[in-house]
Length: 505
Image 1 (spheres, rainbow, N blue to C red):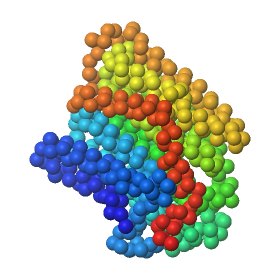
Image 2: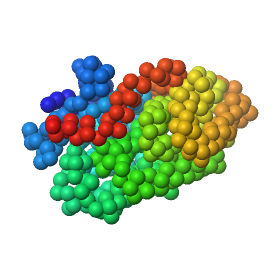
Image 3: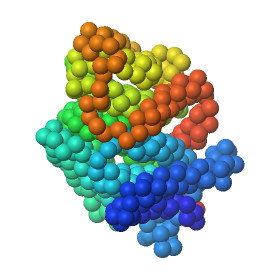
Image 4: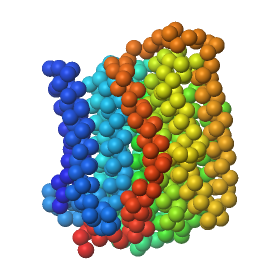
């Protein structure tokens, strides 16, 4: 058994509980604790990779930890295979820089902010590591109740309304997931992923379909797939940009992990085929992609536009994943990396820009590029990646998505992907052109900080530019990611590897 797995959950959890006590004595001590715990959590992930490098490279990597030495299916199991390693690495990499960005960006109620941020970190790692369907639900709800206060972090009317809507839809999604968990337990008498996977086929088709529908509804509501998208744009517009980056860039990807783990490794992809749900998911996902781009095109609030863009891109990811060929899975996972990096980059650069504007509207951004040309150039470059321009990572992932759609004869997927890129060009170029106009705001020296929240402006700009650089560099060397992605795909397409890994058979 490997204790490092439980440390990935315990370290942020303990940090969250220590912050209020340390905060009583010194703000400086709290900042030291935050930085130390962030680096420690990231280092644990790096240690796992280095210590298991040989098994990772030959795709035999699997770690597990039985809490209290209770052997499954009775006890609670934490496990990490190539799929969960992939998502865990994305979480740790993103949170490392989002936390550092937050140190420079957030200027009030810091202690409360970091308590919630580390609880979210613990919940996300709990989700990707748990081998138990009930604890999956527990961690999903922990992530919801800790992220909702961050949506309302600005303590204004918009933030409160957005948080209420976010909490309502998140709770509704959680209710569907919980009903699915109850149905699984009543019909199979087990909560362990591997045990469910071994026995799920013994259920009658109606029961399997009912369980699948409840889980799909719950996941898609939490994910913000159309028509369950109502909460997403308002939440992203109301909260600080560091939290928008977390919601859009990282948390949505955790829900994608849940979708993959449940419907490939636990219930089995064949249940989607037997019930025709794969076709329904494909159609709904493409509609979501199309509607996301249309709503983004009609939006004049930059943060809401970025949120609608997320709806569109998540729809494309889900659509290409359910094709279920090796190429399609590669394209979907590559776009997970791509969208995470680009959306975090867009929200961090936008977060800086919006500190110098009276609002989020298109007209509020006129001339703002001249406040910091490098940051706005970074926004422009990453927007090009979202459109699908080389050499950014967005070009590579969209190229493989198009290949997957074309090779499998899904022409509507091809049309919506290309059409979405054209729409993206139109709605991003509006903000870029507006940013370089000088008419409203005049010379650069007339810009003043409107929201006094920066502690360290240099930290904010540096982290934003690091993500911009990652979008370019990983776009050029994207094939380096193929090794880990192939390992994750191998796990997705061979559920027996996951079952045998947990049960030790």
